[in-house]
Amino acid sequence: LYLGPPAIMTRGARRLVWWAVVWAVRGEIGPSHSLGAKPSLRPSLQSGDGPLEVTGGEVEAARPEAEEARTKSKAALPMIDVVVAGAIATVAGDVAMHPVDTVKTIQQASGMSLSAAIKSITRGPNPIGAFYDGVVPYCVADGLSGAVKFATYETTKAWCEEHIAPELVPASRFACAALAFVACSVILVPGELLKQRLQAGVYSGLGSGIKTLLTVEGPRAMFTGYGATLFRDVPYTMLELGVYDLLKGFALATRRRLSGIPETPSSQSDELVAAAVTGGLIGFVTNPLDVIKTRMMTTTGSLAGPIAAGRILLRDSGPRGLLAGSTARVMWLMPFTTIYFGCYELTKRCLASLRGAPNQDAGLS
Image (cartoon, helix red, strand yellow):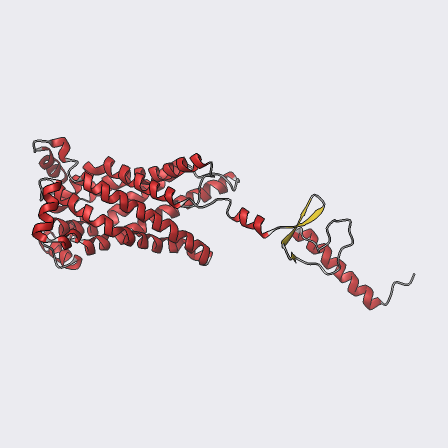
């Protein structure tokens, strides 16, 4: 039989081999619609409708809509869920750990030891209630700021995951956390100021404290210590949200690798351990910043700024003054962060289950 010139036969054989290899390795084929149909000798790895897939002996083009649906199978939480979960988690942590926060504030404002601070609180006419001085304005302000903080964090984090290189996403979470705190700080600082002055005994009550603050020091005094709060809480929030997110993601990746099941869900025990480690570690590291901020807020009038306040603190108390209240702060932040993130994750799951939505296992969202 005459099969044509050898050069044509060689070119045709090369095309057939190329087509067969592509089909075997990639599971993709040219634009024909069945394995029994005559294939094109020029393989096409893409079709006009998207990547080609072989399913049950048939060749189908994967529609962009299907690809998009698979990509968004874990839909982002609705913003209302993030806001509600952030507010509930923040208030729950504040109420649970406020007594320890009161002890820490008195230590940092007066330089007392832990036992002396507790004795000074219990010496008054209402020893139990004294541990909760300032809880109302703080919960209101901190609850609202928590909602804003998580909403900002989740929004900016989702934007970064979509628009920047994957290898830069973990580092971007720290920047997102910084932006989140700056966004919520305008709500947080007035409540923090009133809380700490009530705890330190500067004001005898909430109403009289607000009246004194506005009439004697003026409306601008509501933001006394704002710079010091940013000085402390921007790095704190960067580490708090960033480290927790990374620890939780690491625990989830390890669990999935050990189980061999890519869709293994996040474990609540992993979340709680990650939260406790984050709270204790970051609480101790940022304690010097917290001492400076507390001194600025509990001093009527105002100090020149966080740097000047730090110099005065070192002059009066020495380097040990920077660690004042560090034990109480760690004792406060370890359980607080555990309750805080635990309630946040639990609230998200409850809200998602009410809508019948899938569980969210990637980071905080």
